[in-house]
Amino acid sequence: MSNTTTEPVRQERRVKKPPIPAMSKIARRTFELFARTAHWTGARAEKLTRFYLVPHSEGFHLYVISRAQAYDFDLGDELADFSREMTRSIPVMATLLTARTTEDLRAHFDPDAAFGALVG
Image (cartoon, rainbow, N blue to C red; front, side, top):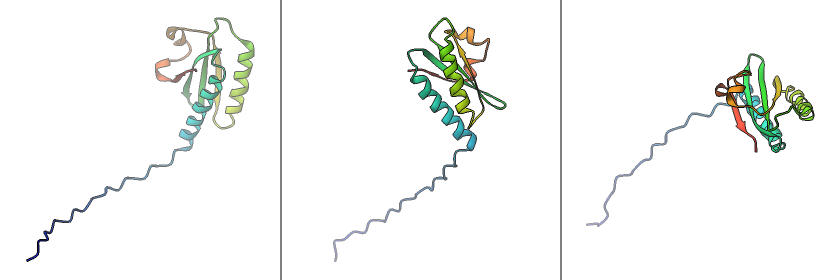
């Protein structure tokens, strides 16, 4: 007699995961816009507090919030240049707003319904 015992062979059941769908063109452009805006605002963190991307029918409205109480025209020009550059891939309208409370922002858009990020 042999001392070998036969254990049942355990077969692993591998569940086939569905393929991850390719990111849609709009989603890819939205991600790119958000990432590039985060980079652009981060390079100006000493002047900016946060930004918001608000979807609209033709693209996005970008609201950038400055730390200053007075409007910075040079920063506004830089934002306009950035907006023109981004519009090549997705329509972007940009607005520079001075330091505001959340309630003040509601006069322009709903911050709770926007994609927002702190700068820096």
